[in-house]
Picture 1 (cartoon, one colour):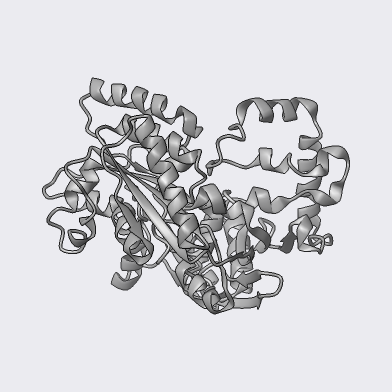
Picture 2: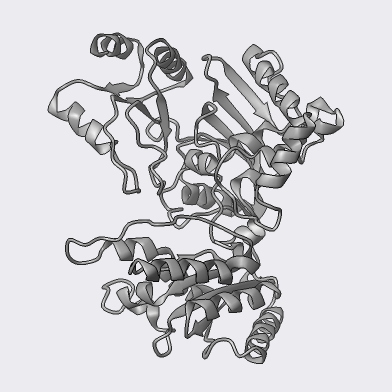
Length: 445
């Protein structure tokens, strides 16, 4: 393999690390992990400079029966960019914002653009890319497409799949395809033979009555809005392909969440949202148990909030003497077992206060929560900083015993969440395992 890699290195404009030198081995070790608990040393690390490099890598992988592992920031929590193939890092050279159409509210970027950097660029135009993760200050758009990222406001702003208009990607035969959604106004690259083969096979699958029934029975129902894993065949069924309109097969629905397994994306076109209303409030519902907070979540969802987020006592206790987050816990009253953070945004302070009062009255009527402090506008950043810091705070535990991600981003219908967590707590108690709960409760996570 080393001889083949040497020949490949000579053909690439970008970098390829694979030999026994200390620097090359250091690169291989650096790319052996992501933000998960997994570790596996790759056979090589490639940093392609352009699409031609990617085509070379695809042909090399095919000829040598190895795998390509597309990687952006490496913030994934389930080992998606770890493996023994060739890790293909798109963060170094594929990091440009290519085109913005402010009037039509879309932007075209390369996969290595950081989500928060993109929104800073868009802010003067009154626009934003909605889906965000707790790692949005470093997570990149390519990885967000691969993960179908959702984030804090997913119950309103949706997931990446809801905003993906088009992608340009290198397919497994080394060809380059432009794939558009039907609403993007232009057909996908119909001259690409391999893409046409894929589309024809998908149409045959989706037009099969047995396959459609299996998808309907076994994929999550529409009440589970937060579903990131697997190929979204159910989302393809939302198109008109089963009604005989071949032009409406929306492959972007399939690419979002496919974890880089269907091709290597080089350009991404995203639908943008207007900036949110100016007035913001976060109601911090203090609860005496996890279950109480989840029952409060069901009440909160009836009031149409922007977000509903859970942080438990374990996370909150880590902030007590923390040099950064101790100041962020000024709103904590007493010693809650959990705090549910419910956010509202409105165009006026009057509308905002009305929403807050409606929630507080509903909670008091059902005897849920013992305190409901409200954080307005920039003050609410303190609550979100505590919520976003959850995993980092846990992983800073003193001593050799360190927590691991037991269940990451698992979601059910929000109304099923209290019973689901009851069952989970019973299982954990049976095996004497302590767990911390921090989640996008509004989306049933």
